[in-house]
Length: 134
Image (tube, rainbow, N blue to C red; front, side, top):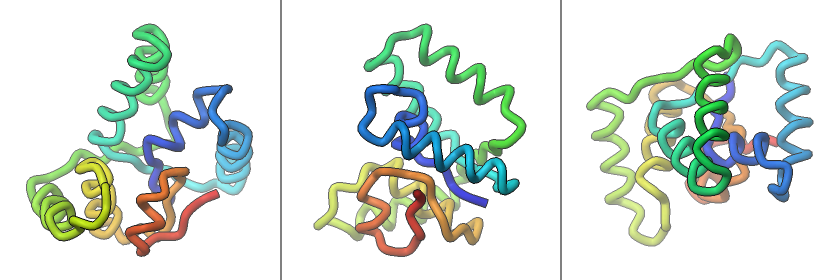
């Protein structure tokens, strides 16, 4: 199972994104291999907001409808335990500019035992505990 970050969703959806082709190719190959994807409600919140700001309300709503109908993406809802771990990560990395959503993703991935993340966000590389895909 691969965790999907906001940067991957944005790259897949935005043809002008520098990583668009790589994101599409990775997603296609992963799906052909039967790979499962998971994300969090916080990542979706961040993605919907950024899509609305960058591409408009209609684009964000259509993306949300597609996500809600997806059979290949599982959405995990953060628990208070995961949020507490995320807070400890956020508090403990003063030298990094991780968003709180990044920290929730790190904490959730650790709780789920996930090793790989579909992203183009260098913060996951800086955190240093996950394999970055593509």
